[in-house]
Image (cartoon, rainbow, N blue to C red; front, side, top):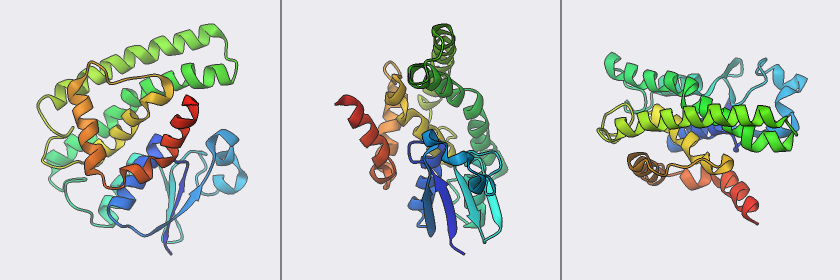
Amino acid sequence: MVLQLYTDWLSEPCRAVGILLLENNIEHEVHELDVLKGETHTDSYKKINPVGKIPSIVDDDEFNLGESHTIMRYLCESRNLPDHYYPKDIKQRCRVDFWLDWHHTNLRHAALRLIRANVFGPMRNLPQTTIDESRKEGETALQSSLTFMEETLSKNDYLAGGKQLSIADIALVCEVAMFPVYGASTDGYPHVETWLKRLSTEIKCWNQINAKLDQFLASKKQ
């Protein structure tokens, strides 16, 4: 059975998995869901991922897997992808794992708070105090995260070191590419900006994988 991918292309984690699949020509079928319409909470989808989150994959007709970082690790191992994505060397692999773990409680944490404040807050008429608190927490976490990334990227071209991108770079660059949706910016972080620009060129499917995001941003400018 061809690998099945369940995705919403406006989701940063979904785009990260999509990049790994497309860049490595891994055969797969795409099932697009709309998170905002609640399509990840249907009974049929929860048979695939009981948590009701995306992305998810189904491989070999029986192996269901969620969580983007875990999916990317699985693809690297099961498809024997080039070593730079997820190195076999234990020390270098741990450097990649560090950034994947760090992502959840730092840059991703900041993004989710700012999305809640600046996107879902007005959309769902959340109390202003809730919006303000979420925005403050998100802005503080974002500044801390970008400062740490800037320091790292001032010394290395890629987050985990090495001479080519890893799945850590893919995961985090998809997060940074989402900044315009909720009013964040890389201004003042030149090494982060250089890294973003370089990866948007190195990743051959960049325009394809970000097409829906680009359409969404264009619609907001009208």
